[in-house]
Length: 462
Ligand code: UDX
Ligand code: UDX
Image (cartoon, rainbow, N blue to C red; front, side):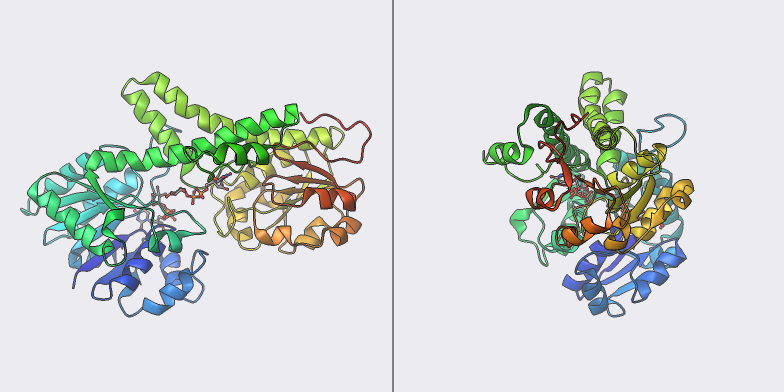
């Protein structure tokens, strides 16, 4: 039996360890966190995060070989392998503020590992970190006076929220990076052995430490770059009469490009894309690669433009003012099937609408509470309404910001009757049946498509 510990019971640590515990019944898996409320939630029936399929897995193994605890020190002492998945947010102060990763939790965790260890251990970087962080970690861990040696292995997570359990169970690949020394190879093999319980060996990629660290940042940068690229084209579609869905289909049919991650939208969100690209930008600047830094930074700038221009198009279409108009924002989660609102474009839209003095009503099946928390000071200027029908009642417009499938199944004819006319719908995810909505009476604006209005001379989209 191996004692596996994970420090950080968040969106990454929780699902990852639940799947490891399920597939490795002979190992004991403990997840610790400094947040007692979060640990209590993991121990209850109301898990702290919503992920399809997660609750079933947790309930199946919790108390058997999966445990949640706040006793970080004790479990460090007992562990053989420690995954670290504490958060690594963007620095908000000092050198690299707004770009570099804030590694203070990581470093604090490394020191805590040293203090509480009485035996050698493998420390696995699960959090996304700047390239060469492992070097710093090795120095902290191995400059101990106890004569203990720690191997640092990189095993970045590629799970996407909303499909985290599936991504863990059927990963495209598992990436494991380590030192090319005998001890480093042995440590890597120990992590390979865990995943080999359910992942075919061809899908387990082993590399050197720096390739593994960089691949995580690069993978997210490539994914985000696709979204910003199709959004850039969507803007051109709106000016030229092309339809971005048709263009994306035509581009994606080329097997060299592929069809996924080409959905034009109100912008990308989530805790990783922006943070990881800015981290990459900072690294490039650090190494004097200014043109490379600028290239990647444009992906984030395009995304900010996409979110802001969604609202400016709304204002233009609604006779150049939304002041005191009720606007129902459908969706607060940064994508469907998650309760997470970190960096959600929906909240960016909400803030912009508040700046325009609109009356904003937010609705979402799972993410209203985290929206309230993430909106902070402006939350009390917003109405939170779980029922989309009630949210739309008396509204001048609906702005759809999250692609929850249930939003496509609503009775829009009934909704239309309860709204102020002329009624507007802005589909920031292109999931609605635009022709049907137009036939009901809505003025329909989608991303990268010609508007369908009932005005003789519709105001041009901005
Ligand atoms: C985090 C990072 O944001 C991401 O870059 C990385 O790839 C994986 O870890 P996530 O799991 O989504 O992703 O973060 P979050 O849900 O905030 O969870 C981190 C947890 O670590 C929190 O529950 C926090 O309380 C805990 N933590 C943080 C500790 O237990 N100890 C600390 O010192 C700091
Ligand atoms: C991402 C990576 O996919 C994952 O591998 C990594 O480990 C963590 O970061 P996540 O942020 O959870 O996962 O979600 P993802 O599915 O990548 O979506 C990110 C954002 O892009 C969402 O706001 C989503 O709505 C948006 N998106 C995605 C689009 O706007 N269009 C697309 O075609 C795809």
